[in-house]
Image 1 (cartoon, one colour):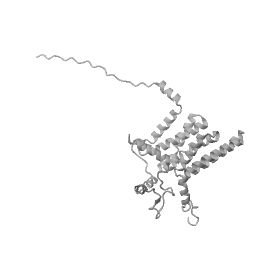
Image 2 (cartoon, one colour):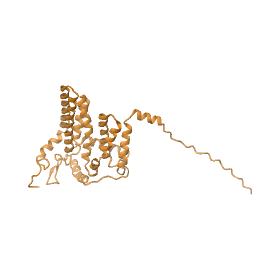
Image 3 (spheres, rainbow, N blue to C red):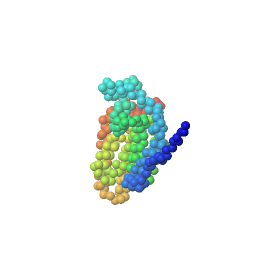
Image 4 (cartoon, one colour):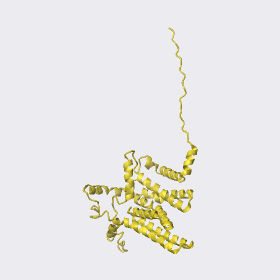
Amino acid sequence: MVQKKRKKKSQKPEKTTSVKIDISSVSSFFDKHPHALPMILLLALLLLFFNQMMFSGKTLLPPDKVTSISYEPFVQQSFKSGEYPLWYPYIFSGMPSFASLTRAPFVDILSWSIKGILYLISYIFPLPAFTLIFINYFLLGFFTYLLLMRITKIRTIALFAALTLAFQPAIIAFSAFGHNTKLSTVLLIPLIFLLAEEVLERRRMLHFALLALAVGLQMLKAHTQMSYYTFMFTGLFAIYWVIDSMRKKRPVSGIFKSLGVLAAALLIGIAMSSWLYLSVQEYAHYSIRGGGGLDYNYA
């Protein structure tokens, strides 16, 4: 029996598709958007530094964060009963939660708005628990970059300043030790400085409104220490600006107009947060932190 030999089919080489990157188009994009590359670099370095929190399912759980979480049952219980949590009955036989800034839900408009957006995005794909803190670090670097670009007009210097501040050990320690409110307050300082300079130099309504809004949003973050530092350094900067303006022989009337516009923007920002701080001011007289502290004999 003769078996017919089967002819082997010649194997055709598989077609491979190669993705060609048009270097000229990439270069053209960065030429049209010169600030994109510094921001991509800032984002990439932050992702690399916080890779375990962003990609490995880990998070930070310092003692201060645990303490903050312990208030959640009380807050949820208050909302279920249709009340806003104003009084916390489980510490020192009861104390204000809103006026003491211990727990004031939905007061920090900026952070809660970002949380709402992240909540909607989480329906599409899950986000790590560290996402909000990560965004705060990026915004700190981004606003610092804008400020230094306004001052120097040099991208490398602005990027260096943004990276230096975002990765400063003291700033990194904020999230490591649970001081996330301090971080979210500090990130607005470069933006406030930028807008303050714009108001002093140009006195435009847009910058005036944005400065008042930025100050109000920062104060509603309920970290009075960082807000105090912001006002202190803004005042020092205003003094420097006046001296520099006199050296440049600017009209005195223009200097006073700029200072008046700056003061008005700051006052409007404070007024935006008055619904929180009027209660804080009323309670401060009964608090160790606001009532003059402890005397020598007590210590």
